[in-house]
Length: 358
Image (tube, rainbow, N blue to C red; front, side, top):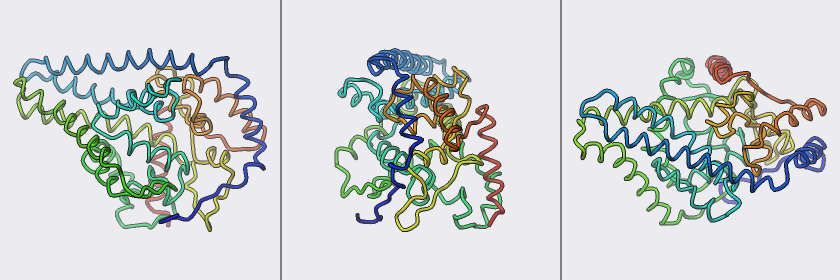
């Protein structure tokens, strides 16, 4: 393989834990579970899209100069994450619907938010899910050198202050994604262990169309309807502020707390079996919070998602207790934070430790 050696996990034949876990999980699922989940997913999608479009209407109908414009802009930004996780994320994994064509069309939710389903899928499935938390392979933890997440990464003078400046950087996450990361991916050919010789021209067209739509939605149309330029620009910023905060807090709560491992590859071999790797690199948070469960599209049951990405998220509350029980029985790790904020604090403790640990 060009650019990267073949990566291998320890043989699955030795993984008695995952063999027993799969058997119990699939026995626990109801008959026709995919069809039932598909109906629930469609209902959630219609509700979320209605709320999103309703907030857009409120944004456009706000009186000129009213501060409520910024309120609607923030809510619109925050509302992006449940759209991505409940619709786009499920569609990428083929779990939104039993209808393959509907799964393909619902990936279009990324277009509404100014980004590309194609590049997001490459990063998410070929890189992150295939090799979660693997150094130099998982693009989700290799996005920038301004943050140090492992003692195996080079320590630069700026890292002494990373626990202080990263909260501000996180507030710019989706803004940088919109203006920088997507375009950087255009020049990328290696996504995890997947090599892309050339990105199809149609994907560039789709990406640019998404960017134009996003700018029209948040800048062009409000100005056309008479809103002041200054307020519209402020609205664009607070939209991304809201989107950035909820997105980054979801990401840091699942893979980069104090307990999750950043794994190194030695001669093309990973140190664990595939299932044990998921347990060591992933964490759950707030698993008993139903509001967060629906908001994050099951993302708070993240261990279940990494072990069973082909099962719709509506069944994760059923699966998680089984995982915890089997992990304890087989002496495997299982990481869980009691709340959203506890998981975030764990991440910043990790940043502080790695700010001085060489």
